[in-house]
Image 1 (tube, one colour):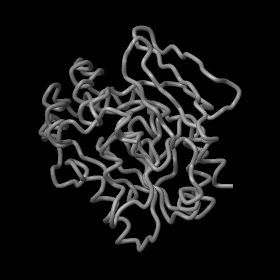
Image 2 (cartoon, helix red, strand yellow):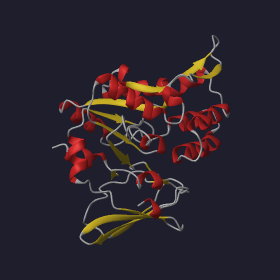
Image 3 (tube, one colour):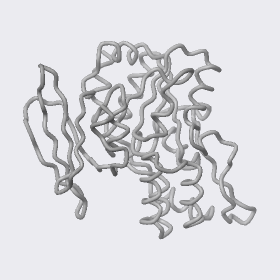
Image 4 (cartoon, helix red, strand yellow):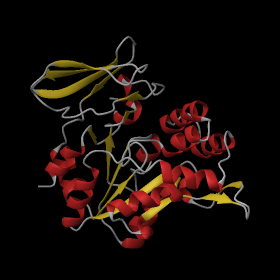
Length: 293
């Protein structure tokens, strides 16, 4: 599968994409925000198996995905997970938090370019994080103003999904390369306790000036999400754990001692190289909700 998708492909925004698995269409074209490229989605049936072709309109990159329908084994792991860990930016939330904060501080474009590189796995995460923050160095007052003026925008269906998981006695965690100060409000909305948040911490001086970020947090570096998941699994004694996210750092959590399952959520950003490796590729949280029974 990996040979079908170039690891250097840029992410394709898929804002508002819904019901991707519907059998009611053979092909459709969706147009995104003004100035963004559209994407073309076609269903291909081969040997009675359904898959998706996703391509940039006007571009040459094509992804051929056969993991949009979960296997029996995948569904079994998902339904019987002791815990589910969610990425936050472009998964639980519609935005990339650091990009939005940078835009608020006047450095949006340059920071967004670094974010795309970091999430695609082309540069070490810690390098990208430091580089992005150095471009705008947010003060405490800027952060506070941002949080007041820009409340979190949750992805459609995430509140219902979290409630369903809790009802099924499945523990929920937020694991993010973003910042705890920006994730706390999200956790509050979803009813996720503070101890179930693993994220970075912005550091400020006594006068509110930007000092950097806490490099002791595992999520501040490449492989950090994998370390956090391993720590959670071992400390809580979980046998089965699922990771849900959209980026390369989320996929890293899938492995020995870590997540047993990686679900790529592409309802906001389709990162083709990551999607191709996922156990299950979904574009709508309703698919995960309905599969829980």
